[in-house]
View 1 (tube, one colour):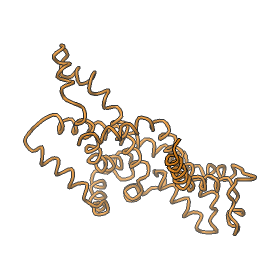
View 2 (cartoon, one colour; view 1 turned 60 degrees about the horizontal axis):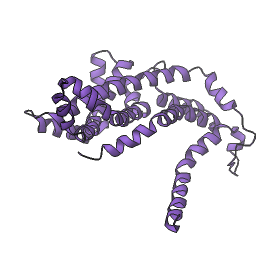
View 3 (tube, helix red, strand yellow; view 1 turned 30 degrees about the vertical axis):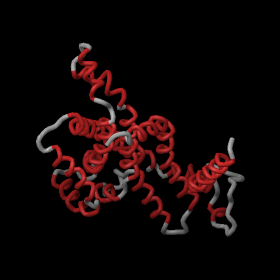
Length: 276
């Protein structure tokens, strides 16, 4: 191994340690009592760790309903975004039709709109169709916000797969639909995973739209639940151990999801950059 590779390896490890330290500190703090966390000397190792903070968080009885709410919304957003964005990206990349350039420009224009400028219109729209404080209402807004960028992501993947592969399969006797399903669709799997991860993160971590649309305490996503948890603690000295435990519980599903799809996502991001 050359000295340059050794230096690059050391730099990479140092960058990784800096990146992972906030996550470690969150988990470490969640295992320590509040008295230790408020001391002037920081505790870098969870000596005498316990799960009392996690037990206190679960005792409130609000975590599991918020978790279920976030999971349902995220699954709806991922499924709908992949379906709509996939069909749109396929039409843009494979077909030439009137208004195609205008459609592409419209997608770019939508991405330039600030989300905060749409809150009043979104609230009035959801109120007019009686979809405030509902899973369907917030899911529709999330889908509308995530689909444009997802189309751009999938467009690169579809354009990166030569259409000649489908044409060769059709020459061999397959119909256009079967050629697409057997040849092209499996090659798009990494792109679908990468786009699905993006849609999942947007739906899982979104806060401001949920704050506007979901106003009842009985229907809260995890970011709203975490905010309410901190506000409840603000009436007295904040128990940072419980706050960190709650934050760990919110981040844990995302970490597990990343571990499951990281291989596909990495290959998808690289292959999507081949052709725009």
